[in-house]
Length: 224
Image 1 (tube, rainbow, N blue to C red):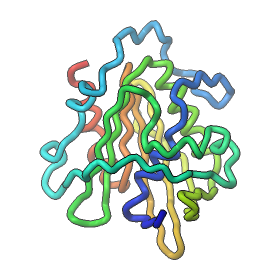
Image 2: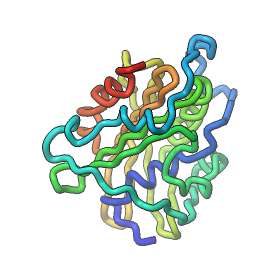
Image 3: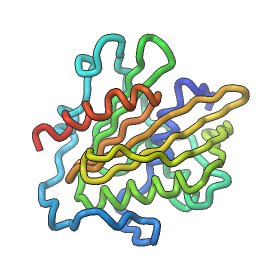
Image 4: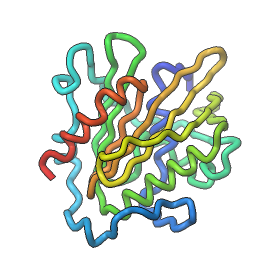
């Protein structure tokens, strides 16, 4: 696979996140402040319902274009130098999205440049969403540097845990990822918010993530 950092970053980020979502990990690294399952009784939303709650070009404003949905990639993704991520299954990460069955996803470019922002929306029980995404973020931010082989092409990775925005949803996670190939580097911010039975992930250029995160959450939860 020919790797162009400016056009494959969001796909690789999603690939790293694409591990089994049914995990019920109870290790010490798992979050312990999440509400009890009984407090979240709403039934999961269908993929069709999630699609209606996604941001579109009119929500984002002028200069944004939605990227056509690409066919699923089948290149192997291998993680080197981060055992925690390897244990989660790098080779299972080729689907490009988390493995929750109810999901919607959209990628946008901005201003005709390499700046991109991606929104993913999932619905499942509060416990499954919390355990799955919490375990993945713990693994990704637990290794400051590692390498990803995507279809045999090496990408050097650096991760940094960020303070997630408070007051949004029930739980929050955030990280900064730096992707390097040769002499080119790209920084991607990724923030996940769980609100009840919804999980929102916004990824892309840090400024665009900060600009649209609250708007995405508002639209996703407006009818909840």
